[in-house]
Length: 260
Image (cartoon, rainbow, N blue to C red; front, side):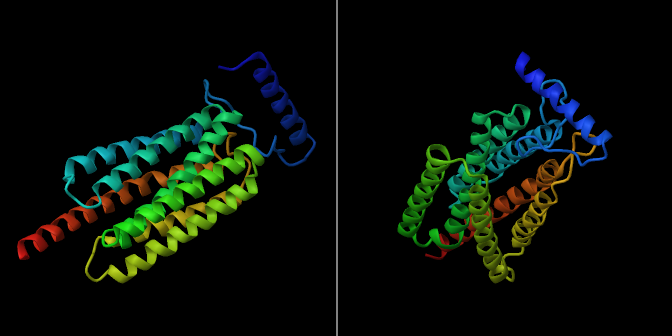
């Protein structure tokens, strides 16, 4: 809940904003963040609601995936694990945008990094790991070590926003290039890869919204909220790709078994 100190800071923030606007100045940021109008107990209503909808979309699509794809599919455990990692991230994103504290901020950032890394892992398993299980074990260990070092640095040394953004952007670009190259190479024989290509390209396009960083419209809707809103249909499309691809792999394995 909101303490007396929290309410005092909130009222002082809006008093400062009104004075700035009346004086013809730009809307100020407070500790690097725009002022938002609270709704009930939600500190950033639009971002919190969009994060909740992303989580809901992920959960519904996970249920659809498990109902559609048999566990015998080679990618089944990796895709289900990715879904749970994503659900965890959207949960903490919702919590963070509901109540911004030092703890919820860290959990939001760390869980988001875990999703980006797991997407790279998912890509590696799909493109290389099914034929080279030893390689994927080494790569998984490397990603886990990187995540542990990343979290340790931000927790024990310095919570560096710039470093965190650069690290996630670099991993995101690797993810984009890897998935896109695989999609282009397999487009003739796998018609469903257009979904994956569309998702990774649109995600990078949506990420540009973060560069706009404008004051919240109606004191609720900022660039970050728009980014979260834009990812809702992309969640659905990516899980649709995972379902199509998992069923394709299951059929391919079945055909190979019959041929043998």
